[in-house]
Amino acid sequence: IAEELGKRLELETQEELDNVWERNKPTPRELSETAERMYFSPDGTHVNTQESGWMEAKVGSVFTTKIPGRGQDPEREHTRYVATMGKTEDLGKRMYTEGLKLGFEPGKTVPVVVADGAHWIWNWANASLPKERIEIIDFFHAAEKLWEVSRAVFGEESPDGKRWAEKYRGKLYRGGHADCLRALKRLTPRTKDGNEKVRTTIGYYEGNRERMRYAEFRRKGYFIGSGVTESSCKRLVGARLKQAGMRWVIDGAQAILQLRVAYLNQRWDSLWQKRGAAAGGYLH
Image (cartoon, rainbow, N blue to C red; front, side, top):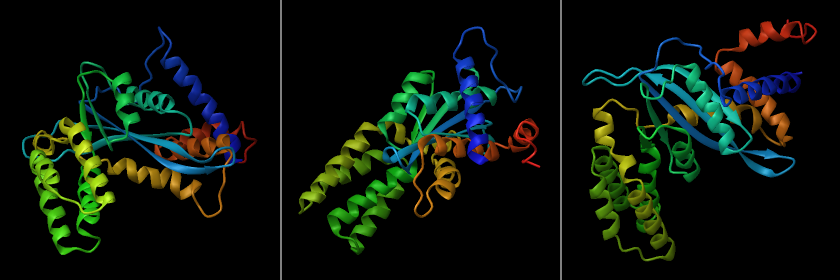
């Protein structure tokens, strides 16, 4: 029953996505107010499928905030989730459509992308969002890189390594990106793995310099973490599709994801009302 309803909902979603990308179609809106800031936060988690083994389910959260006053922390207002077993382009269309529903208006709404350093995420942002956007590497992903270096260079339980990682995590949080880079370049690993970890982390920090201005971002009232999306990976995908022994047909996994999206997006009641009669009453 769930998969049947989910497949119907997926067809409706695809129709809506097609309409958004056609000319002269009305913009879908759930909220009349134009959003001041809108966050787009994509991520991925793997699902075991019958056709392709472990493949990535892409998940995204879209949420709005007001621009906070001086010294105030940002607060989420409205949040929507999307999920797909398809490609990056499909996830991007779903996120953008949810953004339109929540009042995204190019030129008026400030788009903010908060995510880890996966290249597909930033490629999507370049292709789909206005150039006047804010891009932020999730702080906890960036900080975890320092801990990985610490373990690779100093050893798993080294007190010196822990002190090093804590010190430079704090500097990163306070805007010391350059200090972290200098510290990484001063390290002299004794193993091949340690050298490789330091090398790739330096590349990560250099390549994402503009996305790691955490002191500035915090001062201007931006979220610097993507915890809401990581949580949705667990709630939306993990709790239902990744239990022991599960192997999904891809279409079946997508159908279940659609139902869970409807529930998390607070559209379950309207889905219930629309489908009750069509499903022969088995939703009652």
